Amino acid sequence: MSNGSSVTQFLLLAFADTRDLQLLHFWLFLGIYLAALLGNGLIITAVACDHHLHTSMYFFLLNLSLLDLGSISITVPKSMANSLWDTRAISYAACVAQLFFFLFFISTEYFLLTIMAYDRYVAICKPLHYGTLLGTRACVHMAAAAWASGFLNALLHTANTFSLPLCQGNAVDQFFCELPQILRLSCSHSYLREVGLLVVSACLVFGSFVFIVLSYVQIFRAVMRIPSHQGRHKAISTCLPHLGVVSLFVSTAMFAHLKPPPISSPSLDLVVAVLYSVVPPAVNPFIYSMRNQMLEDTLKKLIQSVVSQQQ
Image (tube, rainbow, N blue to C red):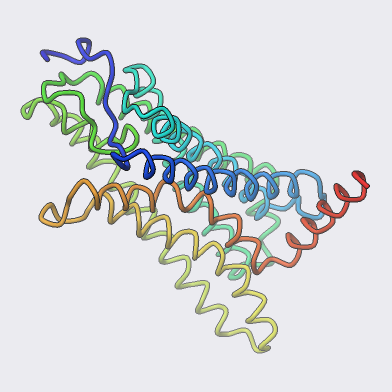
């Protein structure tokens, strides 16, 4: 294959060869996808409907749920359909769209998690300036910056990746069109431009990671200075969900892209990709709702309202 235009479709990696395992994969992914739709949908509805939740923290949480719904909807339904219909094919255009939107949602989510760390830092370390630093306009501007940065990052990587000549076949060793797997199909001498972009993106990711770590160092130092046990517990309870989400997202994504080549294998790559692309969108709503009394109360009221209307 002399260039990318000669590729009309790609072949994604199948989870299983036997029909029973393919159906098991379909039902397992269906359950995870429905859990993600339900959990994130409830959070979006709760934040949108309850005026008590119209604060910066819940505004960012609403954005996070939208991003989780987007990222899991880009990869999982296509994988489910391939298992159900016993096929591996994805069209060239669909692969381009899948890579773009996945990078868009994942990049934006990481930038948003960085902003949410700043939100927690201001709330704990500078509570008197919280209304000034994180007013409605500032929150909208920061969220818009995260979405715009994610869009630009995805656009640059997608355009550059699919402008490369593909001369290593069309079999993608992943269950969705993932950036490193597409690059492996390019000619060995033609991917240096994309490597340069990846280095720039890695620097941005590392910078955001350092910012998150430093924010939480300051947060826990401030929490330790709170005299009352109840005050420390309340402060920590607002930070632990975000810290849990960041840890899950960053650790799985870093392992997926930075693991040493000697331990890399198609089966391991598949498992790790599921851990960073499928699991977080499904479990994030439960992580945030477990220790959040206001969110739990709002969700209970919504469920009770729906049940009473049906009776």
